[in-house]
Image 1 (cartoon, rainbow, N blue to C red):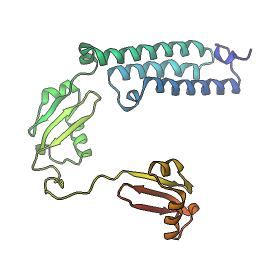
Image 2: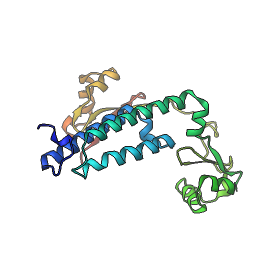
Image 3: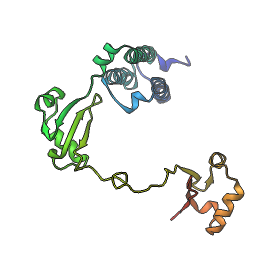
Image 4: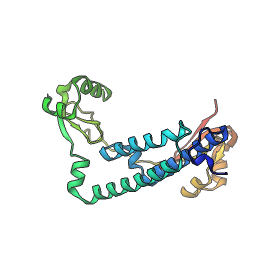
Length: 235
């Protein structure tokens, strides 16, 4: 039968194994798209539980020919529906959100380590020190607040005297933020960008001529709202 690779069998051909892998890959891409960017960007309690279950369910038919693919696809679809339901409840029901996504709590406050919260987060002093080093903090006494976040990360806030001085602190005049658009990428003109910035191919050709280069020589060309045109050539 045409769809025998979906069912359990004593053995599968190479083509049938490949078809299983391709269908599983496409299905999981679709599933991740349906669950949304939240499932990719962070792992809270709900996300982690679903990831473990889906990984366990979909792995077996990719390594065991006696396991059919139809059942795991149906089960995973049901888990996606449950995930979307749990996410909806988390957004709408405060008590459920508080249980599934607990509020952050401090690990360091005014340079003092709160040991009971380290135990609550189940992390060690070494982990705390490692996280601070990644933020280029070499002295915990300089930390005004370190928060344990629901996704398992730590947010650090330095004391006012240790934080980086900004232009606002120095009361210096600044230029407006300029968003950069890609005009040419790998020798190809991005026509949609020209439309967005309201420029023409004639304008672009003049810019290239001024810099004595052709489109094919350009690795990257950008333009921002401050009327700055920059070119990066192939080396």
